[in-house]
Picture 1 (cartoon, rainbow, N blue to C red):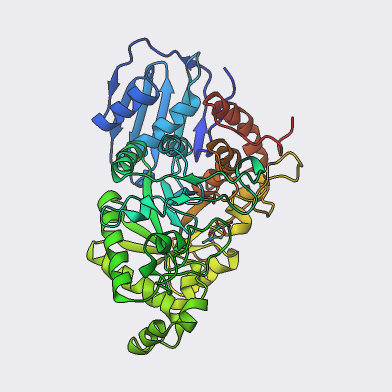
Picture 2 (tube, rainbow, N blue to C red; picture 1 turned 180 degrees about the horizontal axis):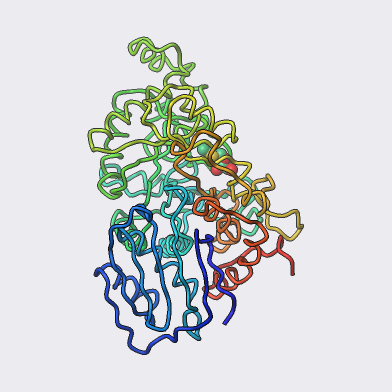
Amino acid sequence: MPEPAIIPRPAHAIFPPGVLPLAESAQVTAPPAIAGLLAEVLPGVGGSFQLTEDAELGPEGYRLRIDGSGVEALATTEAGLRWAVSTLRQLAHPDGLPYAEITDVPRLPWRGALLDVARWCHPIEFVREFVDLLALHKLNTLHLHLTDDQGWRFEVHKYPRLTEVGAYRTESNSGHARDGRFDGTPHGGFYTQEQLRDLVTYAQSRGVRIMPEIDLPGHMQAAVSAYPWLGNDPERQLPVRTAWGISKHVLNTDDATLAFARDVLDEVVAVFPFEYVHLGGDEVPLDEWTVSEAAQKRVANEGLGGTAELLGWWIKEMGDHLAGHGRKIAAWDELVEAAPPKDTLIFAWRGAERVTAALDAGHEVVAVPQEFVYLDHYETQSPDEPLAIGGHTPLDRVYGFEPVPTGAAGRVLGTQGMLWSEYTPTPSLVQFRAFPRLAAVAEVAWSADRDLSDFHQRLDAHLVRLEQRTVTVNRLGLPR
Ligand code: TNX
């Protein structure tokens, strides 16, 4: 038996000598959802999985004991029992399960990954497997970036052209197409609401919540290409954007456009039950609003100080609408300066100092500064690393990230690994960028006690585990 290697590192674990063989027909005593999960992911493993009252465990912690008499797991919620199953998945070996006594509690409640399916649309089966990989790392949130200038991926019944037109690029992109060659390959695709509902159900079975993002009022060129009346020059037929970078073609400020966005969000909340909807709000160029008479009128009618305030106004209108559905909103840190409602959850991305700025403005924060958790950056300086957007964010820097500034305990909900996809046209490239760094993000978010050299020791076995599941891993930064 190899040394047990659990990632993220459990709060307390000891491994007495001994191995519990896997039984042919495993007896399971567990709530039905947990029994179903076990049968799916660990068919040879039985045991007792019970809910209990135990203040020390909180909503996601668990206790796990493996010895000669079998497996016993305790937690206060099914979520906790699911994480016990994730630990068992990492411990399971063809020879059996090592004896263990584990008490494990996460440090932060929001542990996740952003997956950008807008720039490149990956098959829904890949997204499903990605959710399972999140669960294996006890990451509980998938932030699904569904729309952008370069593609609209969410089926909207009321506006079919969003996916008929907005989901397809007719030309290729800025010279960084598939395999780094500019070959003019068209690209497109989208997810039906039925596919996404199935994904949500599957994710729930794994303990993963899905937060959809509809990025507005910028990053909307795909929508404007489908319905030119959403844009600031309705006479102009724009294509779905083929270059990366920021489009200056943003949504206009007409009543009809706000009604459109509300309709879209109505369909979004009908598919995704999670309490938060992410409304974007990043990188909104003011060029078009500045010259638009309608936008000037809106500024005057709403008593705003100028076009820069239209961003905050847009998000507030949508937030009010979503509050009517009982939902809360999340937005990128650009919103902080636009004074959004205090209960807007801020995703601080433009640098660690933005975490503090958002906290000072009274918001709860998910800390995702690009210098630590943007996994679309290069991981190594090896010439063999495929083309990336830029940056250089090595594994050990990710591991050393401290998401919670002094004095901010409880107000930074957590962190995410960020997989923007401009330069990851294939599923295996997404995995290559994600691993090993997403394993480090998981440990940053889950484990109160971190130790870099101990992480590296466990990582070897962990990456072999991932590769056995045919996950592509970036080994260029690791010792051979
Ligand atoms: C900035 S992070 C963006 C994304 C890009 C990313 C590339 C954020 C809110 N906006 O649109 O994909 O940089 O690293």
